[in-house]
Length: 516
Ligand code: FAD
Image 1 (cartoon, rainbow, N blue to C red):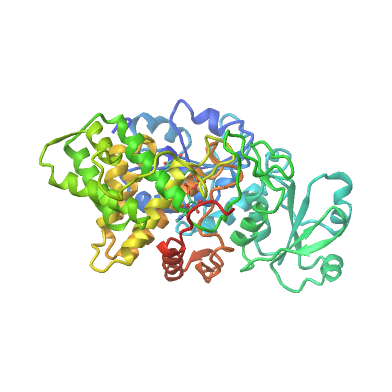
Image 2 (image 1 turned 30 degrees about the vertical axis):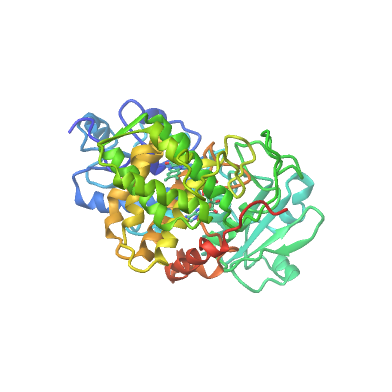
């Protein structure tokens, strides 16, 4: 059992503890830690792991103030450590305050174990028990008074003070405060419904509701589709001038200047461009595949499947479709067990001079432009191509549910240059791709897995600050896609999402090139 993988991987946003790291992570840390001690063989822990992972995704923005960790006590190498922290049963959740002293065993965190929301509230309760040693990255969580707010801009130079008006038993204000702690140029405070002076000054009648206080003394109400935590945080993160910390703040009015050789050109952020799709084809077929001078075995099958679905579903210009169809026919008719990349390249370049069949050379990123050369581009265009293909398949009678997804999976597995991305994608595919039963659920599967990747990468160094990774489509792009459950948690209306995907990625909405 020693060293066997436990229930979590580093991509779960959970710190995986071992005897060498446990003390440095848990003790004398500037952030609080909530640790799950578990045993990987225990069924209860296995079912709880999905809650723990969801919680970690849900509170990932809170990290500098409080982080989640896990230790597998079934790993023999961890046995002594679990015993040192007095862990008797599994799972055991323990809260370690910031700056916990050596010898601390943490405090039991007892909470509703199947409920992300309940656990989140419990963590806030525990955070509030910090007294002298308040975690430095944690903003104040207590309600603000009118006097504090009146004087706020005398001592603070930020662009916004966001005020969440709420009842005393509500956690929304504190959740939004923690959601925003890594964002610059904004402060969030909760204000209780009993703060009469301010409530009547602004005429607040709805709790919760969120108002922005501006340095010029004006108040404006934050417009959201639903008065709930996720909608507030989402809207605040997108206010002009608000940026996630850890990244250079772009100069005002300079947000979209491209620092590459290519000049930044305006485009419509809510449309798909053919230039990106053709660039994806050029790069994948002429550049990425070139890393495989001889293609054989499973890789050859992957290539044939990929080209076959492109030939069937790529909604491109007639000359590009002709080219893809002729390459597909050529590949299908070849009986050889090996393919030289150079002969594929000859086909792609149409050196045989098939009439009206061209795949343009080079890349032009339009909807996939990045503000710097290393941002966006190819991976963005591949996602876009993949979504377009799954949507196109929903409109083609007789399509097998998994035909497109399996072909995309095969391509990613055999050829996608980012091997870590490929292995993450393969893990997601193995999990439940074969549960897909219809072309529409295939489009939905890809959408939800893409959102999972977005969630994992939000705030990563590879994120273009002008194109933050969001749970997509955001409310302004598809209002009916968003809803909340009875308990106030955000939820997707999947029927509306499918409808939206079919419109957004449909062939008749694809724009050819830049807006001139
Ligand atoms: P992208 O995420 O590339 O999205 C492109 C466009 O698609 C967006 O602009 C938006 O219009 C739309 N979109 C966004 N979300 C959705 C959605 N849920 N459904 C439908 N449309 C959506 N990078 C890593 O660092 N680690 C990985 O593990 C990883 N895995 C990847 C797996 C695959 C299969 C691919 C193609 C890429 C992967 N990448 C990974 C790259 C990463 O996901 C982004 O593509 C890259 O960082 C560029 O991001 P972007 O801002 O251009 O938006």
